[in-house]
Length: 303
Image (cartoon, rainbow, N blue to C red; front, side):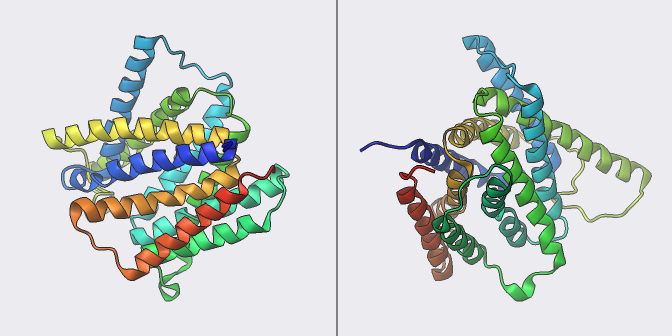
């Protein structure tokens, strides 16, 4: 059986999402010790150091072929992450995640409008099924949604743009180099947010309740440092696989497989943390699998 480039891309994204789902489950332990932005800064420092060490060891060139395109793509991705995590300050994580996972819809729309990809009705069906599955998995109810819900949708829109640019402008770039610039961008955002929090605390400008999102700098424990180190390794490996997946496969096809993150994260949480899977969540996971399977079957057709 001949495997198409789309199917290769989908497999790479599935493996990458599996790795990210596993390491992200352990962020809950980091949240008990330090804040979100310190976590991003520390992870970026470790990730950049590991990538640089790898590059020096194997004489791997990290300079992008088109720095402007890579930086633009990274800017969209970092902006998406900034909006995503910023939305957690005033919205439940379920609504934030559901808004963020609208990205495959934007991928399809932008691909048709700006890159003249051919419209396929089966893709629309697959994305709708996947979106309904996400809503069920995350337990979203229509009467709970307000206008604030559309703020994390912006994160999904920017993430979709970063995915499209990765495929169309950065397909020849080295995946390791792309991940290096991404972690540099996230590190800059981490420094910026930490500075804002420290200035706010020092001058008592605005009283904000302490949470994972608003915690100032703290001295991390040994366990936290170990988790961040492992998370950095997993993020690099998972990120490289996902990057390769987008470079190989058509963006509007492979983007739907990012929904698998919810399935992997939920399953891992059940197996190792005893978090039960309800019938509603199970049905949602089946819908997500169904949407991916539909795209996989039709992925053998030329676009």
